[in-house]
Length: 285
Ligand code: BJW
Ligand code: ZN
Image (tube, rainbow, N blue to C red; front, top):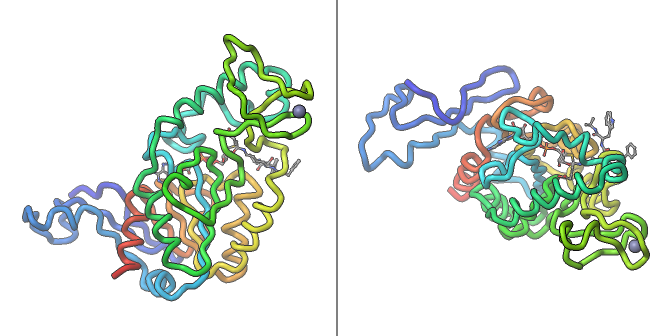
């Protein structure tokens, strides 16, 4: 019988996660209509995870492009990575901006347009709800789409910036004017400097305070969730490992294994928009 959204994994540090459709023979379940919905996503939560989920006071979460995939925002990498034609290592750099600002701006305006039409999904809302259950909850996102904010998350660090904002490449001042490449050409600051999206490119420092507070939150967390990130871009990729090294129970939620998986106490394989709401449900039980 089909095992749909998630797979069963078993090894010393990987607990079982099973998401069965109602037709799954493993549950020996006969698909009575009235029970159908509650059996769509049955996740076998590790006992230790449930205990920490319910007892923890300090929780930190790192999200990546995967959490927004179910909202229709393409990821960068991974099997569904839709920016394959535009590798971020080539376009999300100061060098690319200096050598071809029009191409870089076109990429960002296209993405800004795409992101302005999307909404948070159940994964974003689940994290916003999770925040209300803990006295110390920190959400760190690498995403620039603003969807966590829209979903209502409060203690949020957007460590790679936000695509809806612009700033001057030279003086750093925020720029709030309209950008229209066709009629106005490349936007300029009053200081004469070039305007750029307020995001963090390769080789650039992350916002200092957000970075510091993110690492502090990772270091003190009892429970750390790494959600929908390939874990290859530093320094964000070091946050789950910092948390684990300092004693946090580390959960990774991803549709496929990553380089972080071997360090996770529980690798929950599946879609974050399905798994996170289930976690909130179990917390409230
Ligand atoms: C799902 C799902 C579903 C899909 N449910 N899951 C050598 C070694 C170590 C470090 C370096 C090195 N050489 C250079 C560095 C440093 C560099 C770096 O890390 N490079 C690596 C590539 C090696 N880092 C930097 O330069 C950073 N700055 C820095 O380090 O400053 C100090 C310094 C200064 C000067 C010199 C050297 C160091 C800055 C990094 C900035 C990254 N910026 C970007 C672009 C932001 C703006 C934009 O969006 O345009 O940030 S790159 C891009 O990658 C973006 C993302 O935030 C980031 C991470 O990607 P993410 O979120 O993990 O997405 P994906 O697509 O990779 O993964 C999605 C995952 O979701 C997949 O695993 C899927 O399976 C999964 N998934 N559907 C659950 N429904
Ligand atoms: Zn300026």
